[in-house]
Amino acid sequence: MDKPAEKPLTKNELLKADKPDLSGTIRETLANPAADRFSGDDEQFIKFHGIYQQDDRDKRKTGKVFSVMVRTRQTGGIVPAAQYLVYDDLSGRFANGTLRITSRQTFQFHGVVQQGVGPLIKSINEALSSTLATCGDVNRNVTAPSNPPVDAVTQAVEDDAFTLTKALLPRTTAYHSIWVDGVQIDLGLGDKIAKAKAAADQANPYLPPPADLDDSGAAVDNLYGKTYLPRKFKTGFAIPPNNDVDIFTNDMSFVAVIEGGRLVGYNLLVGGGLGTSHGNKATYPRLADVIGFLTREQVVAVGEAVIKIHRDWGDRTDRKHARIKYVLQEKGVEWFRAELAKHLGAPLPAAKAFIFKGQGDAFGWTKQADGKWFLGLFVETGRVKDAGDYRLKTALRVIAEKFAPTFRLTATQNLILSDVKESDKAALEQLLRDHGCASVFNPGLVKGRGMACPALPTCGLSLAESERVFPALLDRLEQAQAVAGFGGEELVVRMTGCPNGCARPYSAEIGFVGRAPGKYNVMLGGNREGTRLARLYRESVAYDEIPNVLGGLFQQYAKERRAGQAFGDWADAAPIWPAAAPLA
Image (cartoon, rainbow, N blue to C red; front, side, top):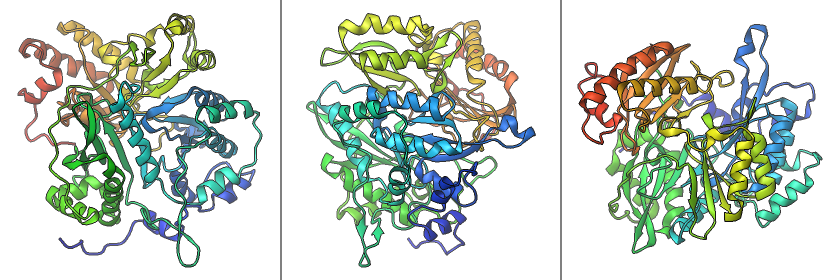
């Protein structure tokens, strides 16, 4: 199949071609004490360094107040206790005092002022993490099962996720020279940094391999080239039957195949992605296709090949149409398999059978295979904070200092504390209760499955509220459940302030997508297994009307459902849909 006729490249493509090391004028801005923001082209370049520039939209009437959001890289959501203590300290020094768990198992620092960006990122790197390529047109954080390894299979999947993470990092030399070598600081974190390094055996798993050199000695990136990918790229690993990372929503995924108690390889999935644009029919949410089977030894080669296909065939003339999902949708699965075979030298064998039975996090205590315990904690909208009597941030800092568990961020924005000794369980739990955090233990099957993006006031893309109104909305939906006679039952509800879908509303049983201030598109019919998309049920519903709209459906569901039938399954099949309801 021939490539389409040439059209003008987007501005982002021209920027990348002009500055393939992604440096822009970032150094100059950092060196200017009067600068309060990154300006011009640097707003795009900083994304590759893990930074989004934002302003407080609550304050726009009196003038823009700029800050940035900085995102860490945590493969599989793993954060050693010593590293967490550094993050806790940095969030108070340079951010708004909170840490936010993302839907891709990372931490975000919000409200970082201009002069704090350099010290923050340098300290993150010194604590053996990174912000490199956590945003931008590259492979971002690699997600993996949140629960600690319980056997050789789960440990092998975790190892493969880290191996692929490193292989897919961009080889840019600018990141290290700007943020590590170029920032001179002494924050008094020496002891905490030393402990973080000791806990990780002194090795930073997020340092990219050395760059290749061309004949002139200049660095080149043989994976991404000079212009990287046409758009962002997301990768994940999963172990059936638990789809705890929403595996079908990724650009590329690896689903573990276990035979005889041994990890023999993975089924490859490609072409998922949820972001859309209101009113643009060329954009739509899509679940990934199952491509074929690969062995563990092929993970890096296959991962690099998929990246290269996106690099070479993705749309660089329209960023809204640039994800690899559009390549799969428009060229077809068989075309993709053939193209992949060209890169690998042979086609992949057919995929092996697999099934997912559910998703979501387990709360409370669970015994590990090694005799230690892990504790699943509910973190409302993923925000680790102190607020009044609820002092989760303080409690977690004390827990990290006293018990040194491994922190594991989940893809549903919750938290697991693993590797806890039996003798420490009671004291750790009491410490959380003493800090007003009893709600973290048993949130129920609505709040515990819910997700919301940050949205207003900082996200520049947001059209409506999300994080700030989501808890109250879930309270009203739980009340409507109870009135209908099925209170306390599981319900997967997600909300975003815009159609980009960061909290994955398009794969929820009920999804709310910001359309305008105070108004949302209501999506219904996704399933608990994460294997079916929701569809548009009602457009531009006022926030205050949502409980009334869904309350009537809850009443109908309670009367009509089969025994054990989930709400999303009922809604997908029920005669409730407007004629020819579109996907988005």
